[in-house]
Length: 460
Image: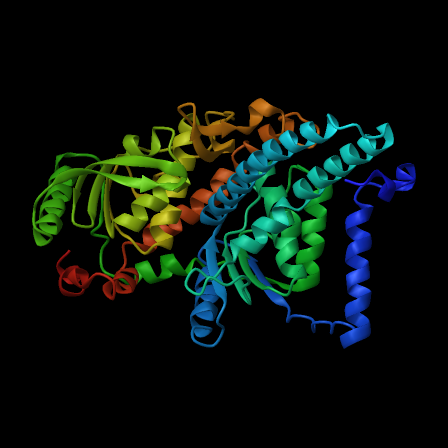
């Protein structure tokens, strides 16, 4: 490095060298080829919100299906899957930055040992700090760019992003959604989203209020906010016109056990009858043991899937690997086993989103499965942990332990959110979906993927 190049280092702001070089190149290009044309504004997207079973997801899926072969770059995500992918991309970027930082530190250490003027040393340190700040500021936009890579064509960008069941269950969701959705909307992506709540009602407990308000402003600017005003749960309406529910057996008496066992034997015999235990891969380098499986059919107890520290990534793995899932011994749920109830809600969401065929044995009817909040509020740490790569034998990172739960660093807002309203709302969705999953109309959606059901649904 030539010290004479920096005659007045005290007048040089951090990062200014990069920006001066960039502006000079821009001016030269403008003089040669003219100003870069401005992209026309993208069409407005849609944000649909309303009660469970009112048809939000169906409308979004109809739109997404209609764009096949017409819009090249498009993606559809459910909330849980999107959050896991965002977290995975952030973790990879963070690891890369740690490696780069280690390399830069070595180089910086070598430079500081050279006989430079103290002012030059200060400038080098300021440049390094500036670069780190820029990298941290741009991590979410970088994830957004990665988020919509066309997996087949290996090309960035998506013209349409369909996002089902937007929620703001914790600080991570608010910050990640705000950064990524803002980036996508600003770069021309058309968002079609569904939620149970209007955008301004998503964050009722005021977590990260300033960031959340920016997200709402972006949604209002780039999307038509449309309420689905129907009070009718169309899943129930369809179920009332269908045959009796034959995939859900209750209560947990000898008759229900015999019926479920008979169904298990019927289904597994069709697929060869050989029952084995297996291990399936889960995101972040983890695995899940499956006690009983048979060529696309798996069987679990409620306690195994919902009574242990597992989550959305595990349920997505189950739904990806098995077209038919048996769950036995589902109890009546209340606030006393709130953590299990939340996992059960997530499990049903993923099985439904992946069009899995579900068989259950339960202690009560579907409508009576969740008994409400009579036991009072319980603070569920598990529901506010998000998954990360396995480190030191730990499968999850507890955000509460780091004091990042709310803008004030205290969990008071979270406690109020755990009063039961969010669970009741989410469980109504799970109940509605469970009812639909028993109907022939739902099973017809599985037929094209699994011909077995085409021939035997009417006998099951």
